[in-house]
Each structure stands twice: as C-alpha cells, then as structure tokens.
Amino acid sequence: MLEVGRITKVHGLRGEVVVLLTSDRTERLDPGSALDAEGRTLVVASSRPHADRWLVRFEGVERREDAEPLRGLVLAGEPLDDPEVLWVHELIGCEVRTVDGTSRGRIESVQDNPAADLLVLDTGALVPVVFVADGPTDGVVLVDVPDGLFELTDPGDDDDRGADRDRSGDR
Image (cartoon, rainbow, N blue to C red; front, side, top):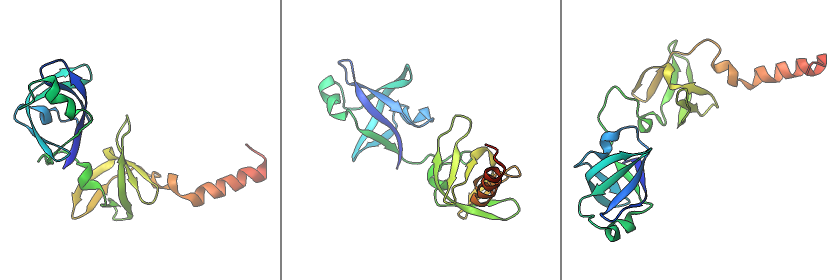
C-alpha cells in the first residue's frame, strides 16, 4: 500500500473531512475508491477540491460525530497500474547505471525538489529523474546524464582543489 494522503480535520456537520492529498493522482478520491486508513477500509462517497486540499465524505460517515475518529488517519491505496509513470516504491533499491554501462550505486530514496525529483544514491550522488532513460527493469534504472554530473560528488576532486586554494592563499 502507498500513502496517498492524510485526514487533517472534520469539515461541517455532515461527515465531510479535509484530506491533504500527498499523491498527485486525484483519481484516488473518485467516488467508489477504496482507501486503507490504518487498517480500516474507507470508500469515497464524494469529494471536491477545497483550496489546496480536498473535502471528502466516506460511505457510512454521515455525521460530524462519525467523522471525528478519522482525524489524523493516514490514507493508503494500492499502486496504480500506469506504465508511463515512475513509481517511487519501484525505484528504491534499484541499481543505477549510465548508458555506457557504468554502475553508479543504488537508489536509497527519492527527494522532492521543485525543478525535478532527485534520485538519492547510496554513493551520495543526486540524479534528477529527468535523466532516467529506461527502467526500472530487472532492478536496474538506466540514466543518461550530462558529463560531469557524478564528478560533483567525488570527494577526491574536492580535496585536491581545496589543497591548491590553501597553498595559493586564494579564498
């Protein structure tokens, strides 16, 4: 199950709750969608956008008193089947190789970044997902990165340049 959002508070008297959607897939809140709420299945009866959140009513939750116990629950859903999308849960643990076949490490996490999400490798390297060329296939993600990207995290280069600056007096 993948986290898709969180119920932040109750809204009104008719059982609606405010959901902060952490997924960019708004169809998660379509009527009839089943979500896991920490062991309890909630089925969406209705939903509508509200500012940067969603107002959602679940089946069987008709009054404010019914909705109160839902406050703070994390909502999770099954992975969606969309072959055009990179899913974080499929990337974690994959080996990253450049198009020339060089292994660059394993993906430990995916970091949210305004320009492009970043693959965080166990080597310390950060690779923008826009450079993913293929995969994940058989536990491998192929990347086509610009020259020099991986040299940015090579500690040997930093040490050498720093030593030259110290000797020359340049700061």
